[in-house]
Image 1 (tube, rainbow, N blue to C red):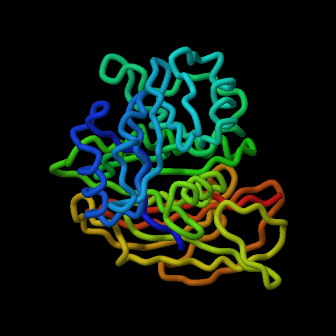
Image 2 (cartoon, rainbow, N blue to C red):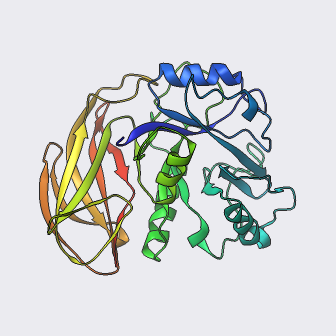
Length: 316
C-alpha cells in the first residue's frame, strides 16, 4: 500500500455526533476514504459496532477536558482521563503509550470558552517526544483559518526544537455537512489496511495532510530509498515527487483548484527549493540537524494557498 486517504477524527451518536456507527462507515466509504478512526468524546462504547468489512477502522477516543482535547488511538486498555490536568499530562501520556496507544493533539487553537470550553490546548507538555501527531488543519478548509495557521506554526516550532511529530488533518466529523471543503490525512500503510498498520504509519510519521490531492515524495541516495518520516544522514539526495491531481477524495465542494509549485521547506520555515508542481525529480543537499518537508501550492477559487504538506524527513 502507499499513501491512502484516511479520516482520523470522527464522532457518532455515542457522543455528540449524528451518525450511527455503520452510517459513519458507509459515508466514509462513499467519500472514497480507506480507513477512519472512531474517536467519540470520552467513551469507547461505539467500538463494538465497528465493522471492518464495511470499512477498516481504528478504535480510539477523544479525551475531552477543560484543558484541551487529546486523541488516543489503539490503546489496549482504558486510561482514565478524568483526572487529567495541565501539570500531569506527561504522566497520562506515558500511561497511554505504555498501553500501546498513539497520542495526537486535536485542534490545539480551537476557540475556547464560551463557545467551545476546553477545545483549546492548555496542557503543559514537558516531553513532546511522547506526542505522536498533531492536527495542523481541521474542519472546513474552504477559507484560510487562523486556528489552522497557529497550529501549523506550533507544529513547525516543535520540529525546530528537534521533536519528531507527524502532521494530520482532522475533519472532526459529526454529521453530513451541506457545504464545505474537507481534506484528509494520507497514511503510508505497509501491508493490509487495518488498525495496526495505520498506527504504525502514524508512529513513524508517514503522513501527508491534504485538501484532497495525493502528494508525497521519496528520497534516493547511493542505491537506498527513504520515505517521509525517516531519519537520514547528511548528503545529496534525489527527491522523487508523486503528485496525482486526479486522486482527490470526493468529500466537500468542488473548488476551482489549480496547482503551481512544490516547495521544500526546512528549519524556521525556510524554503530551500521551489519547482513546478509536475516536476518529478530534484537534487538537494541535506544538512545535519535539519528537517525537510514538501509543500504543494496552488490556487483554490482564485486564492493562493497551501494544498498539501508532508510530514518531514529528518537529517541527523
